Every structure is written in C-alpha cells, then in structure tokens.
Image (cartoon, rainbow, N blue to C red; front, side):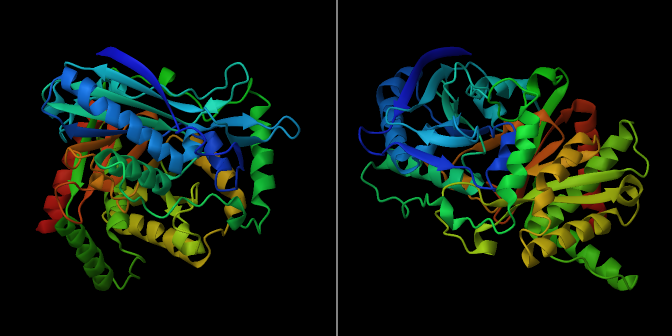
Length: 455
C-alpha cells in the first residue's frame, strides 16, 4: 500500500453559512462510541493513471457538491466556551480529508465473502481523529480511495456517528454517487436541519449530558468514544460474510411456529427477516464460543444489542439530518441459548423488545447510556450494527453496484454487521470478525443449523 496523494475537499464557496447545530438527545449517546468505518468495493478495470486523470477530479468535485447538501459532515465537534457542551460547528472553508492510495493486494479476493485476515482491510480505512488537537475540534468525516490497478477500487469512509445515523449517511453517499454520475442531477428533497423537531419531553438531554460530563472529567480534552483498536489483538482475527437467503429465514420462521404449536408455547412476536437472522446468528455465536472453549459465564446474562429506527415511529421528516435511532438490549442466559429451544428464546426476547419499541419508542430511554455501559462492560455480549433496510448496494457511481461492502468497526469488539444481500433478493449479509478458530466454529454451527432445519 502506498499513498499517492492527499487532498482536502471543501464545499463550493458561499454555499453554506456558518452554522452551529446543537446535539439532540439522539446524538449525545454517540459521544461514547468509535466511528463507523464502511468500505465500498467497486470493479474498476483501469490503471491508476486513468483514475488520477479521469475519475479523481470528478470524485472531488462531486464530493464538494454533496457536502453542500450535507454540510455538517464537513463541520467539527467543538465545545461551547460558556457551557462546555459539545456542538457541531460548520465554518465556511471547513473541509473533508481525501486520501488516494494504491494497493497491490488481490482485489477480487478481498471483495469476496471468504475468510480474510482482518488486518488486511485496515489500510483501506481513512484516518479520522477521535480526540481534539490544539483546540480545533474533531472532524466528523474522512474519505480514502484505494486503487487496485486494472481490477478495482475501494471507497473507504470514516464518520463519527454523532453527526448522523446510517439513514442519513446512506442519503449522503447516494447523493455523492448521483452527482458523480451527473453533476446536474436532481438530488432528493433537501436535508432537514431543524433540531427543534426533536421534542425532548423526557428531559433526556440533561440526563445524557450529565453522564457525558461525568465521563469527560476523567479525560483530557474533547474525545469521542474510545480507541480499542490499539488494544485489540489482530494477529489471529479473520473476517467473513455469511448470507441468509429468504428461504433460510422462512425455514427458521416455520420451524419456530411449528415448535411453538407442538408445545403449546406462545409464538414470538415480530418474526421479521432481520429478527430471525439475529436470533439464529446469536445462537450460532454462543455455540461457537462453547466449541472453542472460551471463558464460560454460566447463568450470567448474555446480551444482544441493536439500534432501532425512530423516523417512522416518531413521525419525523424522512430527510432529517442527524440521529434518530433508539438503543435496545436483549438478554438470555447461555444455558437458554444453547438449549434445543435456543433460537425460539432468542426470537422471543428480540421480538418482545421490538414490540416495546413499537409501543413506546422512548420507553426507558433515560437508561439508554447506563444500560449500554452495562452491556459493553459485560464480556458475553453481541452488538448488531447496520440494517438490511438501508440499500447501500444501490450506491452506483457509474461503475455499477458495489461488488462488496464491509463495515470495519466491528473489529473493535463483539459485533456483527447486517446488510442487504447483493446477490439474493431479500437476503441478508452477516459480517463477522473474530479469531480463526471461533470463525470456523461459527461456520460449522451456521451451516449445520440451516441444514438441520431443512430435515
């Protein structure tokens, strides 16, 4: 890997005024998390020289135009001098870093679903500070384009979730791609920035900021999340993607329904594709831990955490730029998940949590941060990132759909990523990063489990 060039990309002159955006209670919890790190792999059968002379100028120009519509991405997280509260500040001239690199790695191997050394992907991720330097605030977005000569390219991004959720980021990158194809193309309805639409009827902003201030008092300067990567052992970590087809999910659903009827048990609520996938993967991961003889936790709670969208539930504008997702945590014991009804129990606790969110999205929200600190502080936990409802595989810059999309942030802990399947309509891609022994054990549990349900 070699760096070819470094640029900064700003909005067109005078296209956005200096703006200060306060953090809503949906934004504040993301101050505790590290950035999202998506990689988009595209086939690109041209040499580096062709990219530099032809594609790069268009990428830079279209990125500048896209930032005009999503200018908070070019802003910084700063502290207000009077209150000490963090806000997003955009000043004219703010920019996003864009790195261009070249790699001699095997593009088609890296962009497959096969097992790969997890560390091989990290060179494709742009650098994005999580700590303020010299009182300049923390940038919120960085980009890197890596060329694999005559085979492909990878657009890697890093963004702090405090500026936007996956829905907003999806709108941003789709806008960038559309403007690359045609700078005169009409974009979606303009982003909606008015933070007053977020009604804080539970006083959550004050609760969350107090918790953040308590944490910040032990740190120097302004920091977002924490840097776990330096402490993570990547030497034996591999990445792989497993695909759940609609047929697989239907088998799991019908098996659950049949077993519940046979035993006169209540049927789990909300047996949706993503909930079925999460239930099945959760059980497979526990079985994998058991097989490689990782530390056992007996009857201690095992947690599954995920985010839930609030735009539709709370009837907010679909173009709202910022965060509008809730935090959910499910619990079951190891013994329950390893039992013959493990998938049913997992589906029950996930479905019950979704039902609670549908009934009252903000129910128990005053404990979101404290609950997640308990969740992340417990070793037996799994965090689900991403959503198959976001159609990232439709992000076409003119080179066709992405060949592969990876979320690198799951390397920082016990996490899985969910995304729509590229090749199977209605399918779901499950991204994992773990030790090779555990990955082999998971693959065995995953394959055997689907096969057993077919019998």
